[in-house]
Length: 353
Image (cartoon, rainbow, N blue to C red):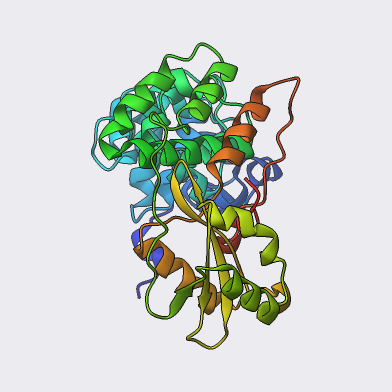
């Protein structure tokens, strides 16, 4: 490995590496690299417009000569700077968008996210017309499926992680219900919403079936599982696992729920699937005395369920109700669940839907 200083040449004026308090405040983690490219008192850097300072921070993280970066951001045309930032691709309006990132520099990961989103024309159109761009906004946008990252939808989305995650999940379930070929038409319909209330109600409507009376048979799981098919077997399983499965006898008999037992593996487990408009869904998976399962056991179960055509995640009925609560002043606010970990995202435990 070569010494970075042999390929990143510092200019001769100033005291290389010294940092003023103002630079530390504005540049944060980028201050040291900037102090090398623009030695104290950093006048050349501090005199730059904010868009150019952000461009410098992005370019300093790349394997470029420091003199080349300094010359480009100080004297280069907007179009040339933008092309360097986007690895040679044209990026109309990028420099104007950078000017809306604020005065203090961002973390490198946030810059990467900004450029990634700006590379999508629909999202770039939104960013070009946003008065102030901040990392939390971008992290919310990233959570949405790409077809929803359009101005007419984004302008109606509340500044809420739970609302964004629920809208994204509603889109994925609506596509599952209606078919992948309908993804574009679903997004275009949502674009016609005139308010946040109408957008989220449209999403809830698309979680309902178009036709009634169609029954979907329970999935067939691998040989490691057996399905509970009568009341006697259900009572035996409930006694073995010491749980309240017998309370769901009517639901199982009516075809709304299917119960399976994992008999092969490190630990035995019982799982319940619920039927809703988006198909059969893994609603619960537990060990004896309703104990949490080991992660490897749970992953084995999820893999088997998904291979059989069922899904994991939120109940479509619960999700539809929560979508309305996100934007209804009378019903809200919605109480969105934690979805930080893989286990959280399975949404287990919602048997009553």
